[in-house]
Image (cartoon, rainbow, N blue to C red):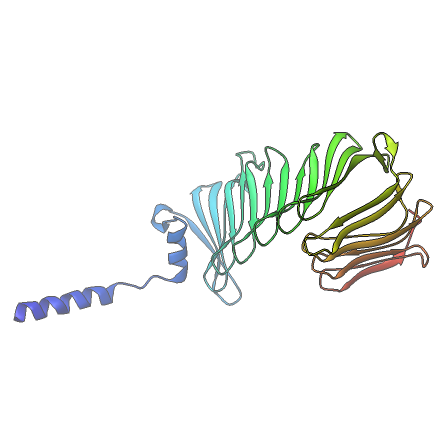
Length: 293
């Protein structure tokens, strides 16, 4: 009985002597970095004296930089050589631990593979494929919002992922265009070249009207002799107004564009001869006279 008591005391003493790992040590373990594997480690601090950055040297000109929030949570990791040349995989994190962005570089510092960025809730926000030169923005539900493939096509999408507008390049400056309603119905297809819309090789005359599934118009344009005429407007795939404009005799009279969150982005007013722009929070950026362009 006495031996068991002594054994229990010894075990308690053993564990009490074990130093509890810090948040930074736990974060380093999570990304696979063991401090014992590096002979030289540089440390940089916030004004609060908390660790801001650790630099782990593989060689004199080859090292890993790990950044931290003041809370001790990991913020970023990157590989550097030859002073400022980044290579391999670069990762940024939100303070909640979810990835913010992932990028990859070859040994010459050129981006390769896919660059991916995420929202703070973990949902995919943007993806760029360097090999295909293909870029995709995503809605909160993971469906494509906007897709661009260099020298091939670009498309805008409804919140459900269906096509809204699609432009497929035939030759430089000439596109095959398609407009869709949210249910997937093709509303119009034609050719756009020299700022003019054609249908069956003729300048188009008529209206293009697309709809959301709730019956609300998502796109409206009146076309006369291949050129917009009168008032026209369009919405983002999430239902917020994208722009509204007015054209007379082929000349723009007024254009009002909106940010995706519904805030006004810019106004071109050719009657008042002014150009005004705001940021996504509604803060005025500039207001200047139009130059006539």
